Image (cartoon, rainbow, N blue to C red; front, side):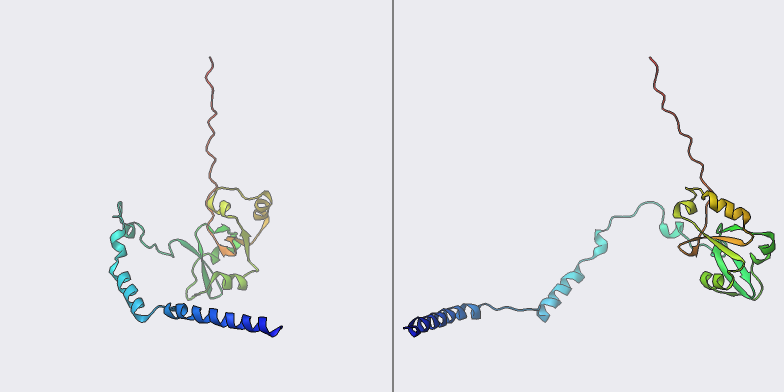
Length: 184
């Protein structure tokens, strides 16, 4: 008795799967695009010119307004013992008289990166890490930094994230105009 329901179940399952197979066989499925489809899409993409959709530029030609500048004119050179490095103008915060001769190019000196030069000359160069606001001249140095600069006898270079950076003069805050209310 137990075998009859199992046999019926197996037969019903076989019948159902036989009916489903022709529907699956009629439907063609692909996992990838054919070569022809890819070529057709490429031809369509090449026919579209992205430059035709841009608006016409107005104003001064940026290639003429943003001419490259001379890196040596915008840098200070620090040299010592046959090596030299470039730092941006205004990156040297303090130059004691004893190290003033090192803030120029020595004849025959070889240029190296700031990191290499500083690693070899830590004895007479001190760095002061500044914030972006301080470098832009929007924030003053802390009192302890000003005291440090007053007592330090080394050449002091301003750095931002380890690299030398220009420090603009502190901008004077705009005078606040008091809003006066008219008196009745």
